[in-house]
Image: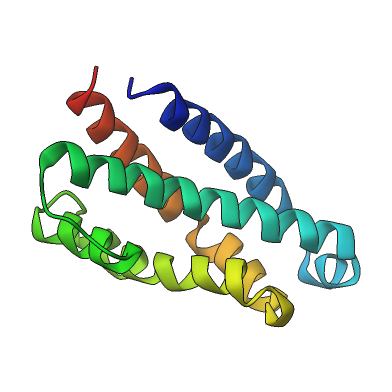
Length: 141
């Protein structure tokens, strides 16, 4: 497995996934009334997206795919290298923007969008994370 820092991020991302999976079972009406639940969802979504992007950056660096200056470039390099499969490309391209909203636009986060993402995209985010983890492990067993 890659260096300890990435291992810790992956472990935290898997924990975030479990928290988000539990939230996905909560009806929206209950979710929208529970500020603590919304905070938990927001933070764990941020952690998950950060871990995906950190793992992607590790792969880009280890494979020598380029010197990206942004998360968008990291994702584009993985797409160009055919590491991200076609059915996950649109989702992967949306991750840097989603991450930026959670990190920098925190005062204006729309929790209806976070909830919808948890309900509709969580399995694909988990699939992308595991795909990237497997790639990282292959590069640094």
